[in-house]
Image (cartoon, rainbow, N blue to C red; front, side, top):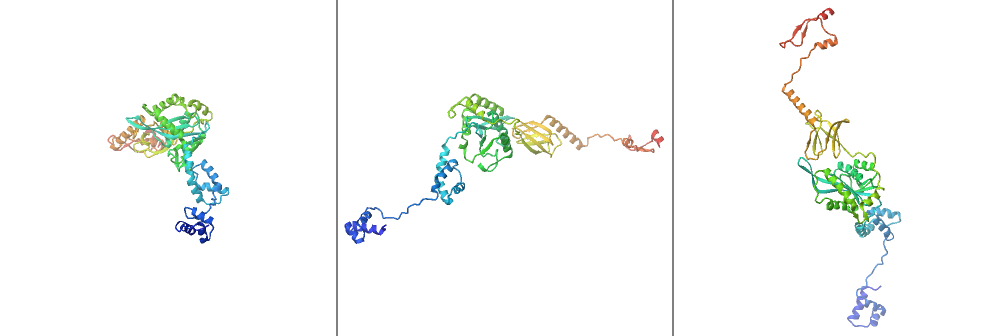
Length: 435
């Protein structure tokens, strides 16, 4: 290969000195063919190294297969699998390759349509309805619903609540499965604090109560990575369907009214509609999918939340945002509370002390009439004791002597004379004879 100097000298003699190619060849000691090739080059000749290829090249198809299965798979996991198949390269070239090809697989995942077998999976998500519902005493609360869908048939169920806590998600989940007629093999859910105690995505750890519930139901819980709503697109679309088709022009007088209106609408409208993806009516597809769902256990698992609270000085326990009365005389004691969506039950050592209907009124005071009477009587008695306005009978000490047979034959002091001073009493006849 000739150098840049040769290329420059040939071009100078040919273009500036106007020498013929044969003479240039003789002067520079090269063939006329070489002169012709150098004159044909518009740019100076450069050394180009023939690429030998990368150690990763034989494994590119395998990398693509792993990305197709999971577009978010880390490079450390990919290189671990490749080394088992003979890859001897480093992780740096693998990371550079993944940075180039991974976006294509992520984009493909965003637009692909996933199909599921009947009863294979369910999607669950909280829906925050833009409505406030009366809860009594002039107060209103936000309206939420746990929406659960079956992607195969597009059937859905919703259970309404006033909050999104662990105490709400468990009874709501059981209510949804009751309405759907069974439990799918797995349920996909967001990384929500009502379900997840710590961690995110594949490293999430469920609340023990939630894990126990789904263990009883026989369903696997799949927690999504953050910012992955497309992985449960069916329930996302159902939430939008509820906002556009169920909610408009509706008013709710209570939580129970919202639940009743939705259940009626679902049977009469949502399940009777023709679903394009399903290729038929939702009710028909749901009737088929129900035969693939796991039956709910009998009896149903307990979904009440167990708490331990301390009794206040005035005889109330605070549960949520409301105070509930208990019998007086328990100030400072720690009591067990069983909380359900409808009731608040207070117990002590397994014995029921109080049962109240649950109140959702902020800062409410729930007072049982019997507790109110007992509390009022206790306050009146405490007031009389503090003022000294209490009449106590004079004790008769002779009865203690008679009980132990220790009566004396001599005169004794009577415990109470008419003027308040002690007086002597003569021994009785029988006692004198006995002496």
